[in-house]
Structures are given as C-alpha cells and as structure tokens.
Image (cartoon, rainbow, N blue to C red; front, side):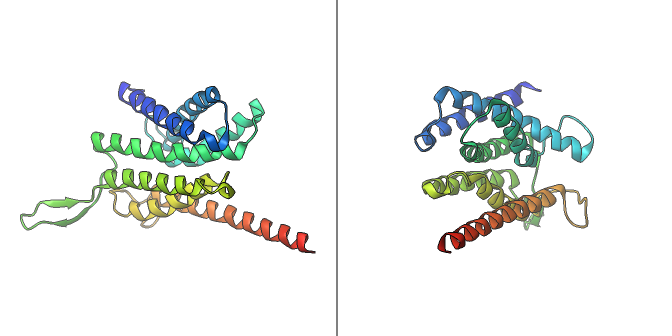
Length: 224
C-alpha cells in the first residue's frame, strides 16, 4: 500500500469521524467507539474494494468501489456479532455517510492519477476531443447523495434505513454515469460498473419492498 493511499485513507477516516460526531446527537454512541468505528470502516472498506477488484481481474492491487458497497456490510455484521453490539441499524446509517465521503475522496485520487477517465463525447472545431469529466462528476455525485442522506436522516422514522437509500441512489446514478466512462464491456454492452450498479439497485429495491410489505401486514393485523 503506497503512501498516497494511506494519506487518502486518513482523510476518509477524519472526514467520516467528523460527520459521525456531528450526527451523534441522533444516535447517542460513545464518542470513543465512533473513533474506532470510523477506523474499522475505513480499513475494511479499503479491503473490500481490493477484494472485488481481485474477483474482477484475478490480480491484487486494484480497487473497485462496489466492493465496499457489498462486502463492507458483511464485515459489519461480523463485527456486530463478535462484539455483541446494539443499534446495528444505526451503524449502517453511519456507514452510508462514510460511503459517500469515500466516493468523493476516491474520485479526487482518480482525477490526480488520471484513472476512471471519461469517454470522448465529441470533437471541437479544432479536432480536440471533449472528454466527459467522469472523476469530477462522480465525486460531485457522492456529495449530492450525502446531502440527500443528511436530509433524509432528519426524519426520525428513517433511522436505520439510510444504507438502503445509499445503495438505491448510487445504483441508479452509477449505472447511468458508467455509460460516460471509458470501459471494456464484460457482458454485451455492460461493464462491471453497470452490473454492480444494477445489483445495488435491485437488492435495495427488493429490501425496501420487503420492509413495506412487512409493515402493511403488521398494520392489517393491528386493525383486525
């Protein structure tokens, strides 16, 4: 792991912890716990991105952001089980905030490293290409999703469901934005980004449906 990666991880940890502390009035976690929880998410989030990159390419050293979207919740569930923590749903809320911060910071790194570049959309009159600013737009997308989640979190009824909103919003936006990135198709016209984005959208939509269906059944039983 290079020094630049360590710097980015430290930035993600500090920013995540800052937001955790600002939002803690709603969740009432121990502040010392939040320090270690932010560190846990940062380290295992990085591990998750490398794990999915290995699955995609068969090589170590790369990162795939959707690894954190799918694998980090599994690590969190194990973390909760081992340490017998409470308010698990609230921990997922904070993880969704951290996910947006990670996305924004990662795209700064992508911009500097000139990876995840956009496609050529058209040529100017002097034949210079206009390349879609993929890294910038995706970073802004992460910030916009963060703002939306913060607005949703102000409603106490939505405590514990922010991560589903995060998966749903990021799944939709990333699926669309992936068409504007330079990519190699792995299935028909779709890249891994398209596939994982679609999975993220479908999984979150299905869980939303199950929750709504469960609530409707509960209300019917109460009425009866």
